[in-house]
Length: 222
Length: 250
Image 1: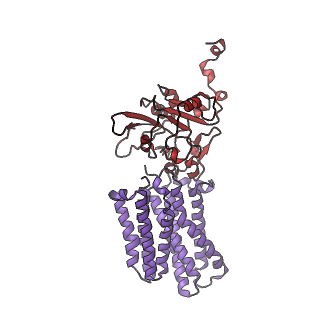
Image 2 (image 1 turned 180 degrees about the vertical axis):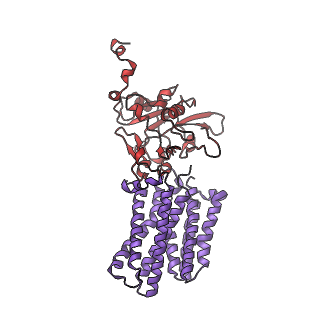
């Protein structure tokens, strides 16, 4: 450790001035590293007090057709560059930040629910307690002060990485290029900012569009 | 979670009836005889009641009904719900206004001549726009079907034809067109397999009986019969729209 680094204490790395300036915030999900431990979804629920039955981040357990092999596929809001939820919301409650993140303004949401079927990834749901739409915002309260999203920080295998997808010098963008990371359900044409390493076509049908619920039939753990 | 539930199906069916009745009202108002004028008043009244209850159904569907005004206050030009809420509002105002103008059953005057084309344009918009709302929902592949605008349009024409009471051949032709479009939608999207069982089948049955069978059998010039047919069409349209909403995912 150099003398310069030793002078910066851990808590001094956190604060408004330490936020990374990203052109296009994104997350890389490396399915070759994911072990399906649910750390991402649990840390997300804890970070945002997501109630039972709502999911901002999910980990799907998918069985490869004809095999016993299980693959784990974490999903979250893809922060699409052509986000259909943005167009569908009648009150303009869904907006975009300078770094491309798609966020919901709670005060403008009146619960029309148009954003829910608009999302091909099933990333949006109605908060059971507030009755407003909710979804992943890449942990705005954390990334705005220089921290990483809770799911990225909690992942024990570094299967999730947060970075600038439009900056060729960013290590995450470089890793994405090296590993030929691609979005899931690319045919939806929404240009997601979340990309996957190791995704295969058979996985895609299983991860699209529908939010699990904990209605009368009991909780669905995915 | 099914985000678009039966409140939305009810609104879609009431909007269809309102649009069809208003269209018929416009045609009747353009005729010169007193009988047509009286019938036009009834058609406009049906239309006004339908769109009024329809908008209440829309508000009831919100998670925060008290905040319904935010849809009107904040305009998102890209959103078909945002556009549609304004179309419905203007339609209600135009229908109510025209109904007020012809309330006496006599003088039609310049206000009618001005109101009829405006209401006609709004009626077409009201009939079609719900299908464009569904088309904007990319997460529901079946709702991307290009047949949906034609189904919604044909339903409104069907309502209008029932009010106008043209020849039997025309009415049956409109019914056949609507049946063919709905059938085409179910087959081409793969939704037919979802209709084969469960509650979807019940809604499809309601749609067939009340949209196609009852109004076709109940052919009668009396105004009371016209109201009954309008009620039947609301039920029938509700059944079909419920099926469309329930089978969004293929």
